[in-house]
Image (cartoon, one colour):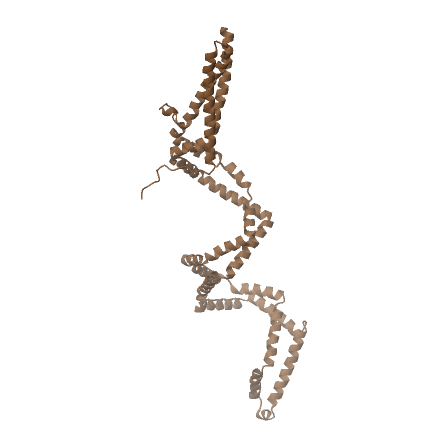
Length: 432
């Protein structure tokens, strides 16, 4: 394939209204040319008729100077874009001849005046980026579209995490952190808060409920009766004393449990309070408890089931997320949509957060522009240098040529007035 990187390229495609610009330019050119021809005709006519009408000398002076001014300005305007009449006159076709210099100067001008830090920061600071983000996210349809995109990226994200070794690294770091944690003080702190909120009494209630179920379980009572029978003398077993004792024990225990359950200030509850408080104190201060807790921790961490727990958790999480991401009614997508919408609404209400975000946007974008502005300047210059000369000339002429044609009109008017003044001066100096 041929390398076209250095071949001329056309400027950006002209919009539809360029045709109207070209028609307007042609109209102004024709009008200026006709006006110039009219000035020449007036000059010639006035000179021919001057012997019969001496007053025409003023018209001739005006028309002569106007024609000279018009021709000079025609030459100046044409010389910007091409060689007048195709003649190789020096310092003509200025724009095509200086394409490289114009491109470099344009790039530097944009860099110095449009991409300078102060105006860039001022312009960026006038934009409420956070409000646009909030409005965008608050729209549920847009939030759902973003959530769908994020959900589609779940498989690639999981693969990237897997390939990076992040799950294994996190599991290893978590194990190392657990190994350094002293279990006894940590457990004592947790239990202390548990006891301070009297949540241990709810545990006590559960124990009472469990004992109540035990006393009503026929299999458990049968086993208890067998134990009682084994401890009784033969004569007592003959008179079925085991059934009597079991009945009394169950009845007394049931009554006691009912009393404890119904009385929040029962003595057994206070005993349980003291037991819990003493246990927390021992766990926090006893070296023996601390050593036992550390031993249990090491035994637990050494178990193969726990060693594989992190890998199993990651595998399970990965399977769930992949399955859910591919589902028509994805829970992940629903939650993401709701989360993004809530973020947008919260952001719209919180002016302080929006101000912080806008400042962050300004700092980030201004820094990016500052580091890239020389590249932008070079890019603009390179693009202009690569433009086709004919197309470049046409583009410039279409956009400013109509105004330049009015210079020709002004030149004829100013020239004509100057001609009148010069003729008046001639009369004052030389007379007649």
